[in-house]
Length: 74
Image 1: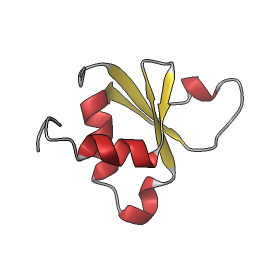
Image 2 (image 1 turned 180 degrees about the vertical axis):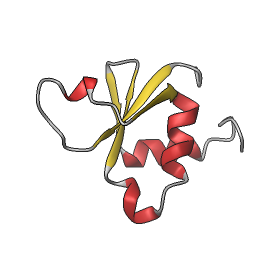
Image 3 (image 1 turned 90 degrees about the vertical axis):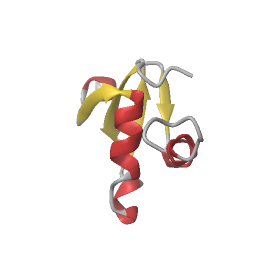
């Protein structure tokens, strides 16, 4: 699993053709998952992660990744 792949955090449900360019934070997949995992529980649902520009991770998948035994920092 490539935890170092490029990823970015975006507001969920932003929509529109340019949504993929409007990242709130950018870094590695591990960094972005960690950032959302560490947010207040009621804030998490406001964000999604774009992984390498072609896959969108929603909260259930983000939290599943954060719970993996091979997640960096666990």
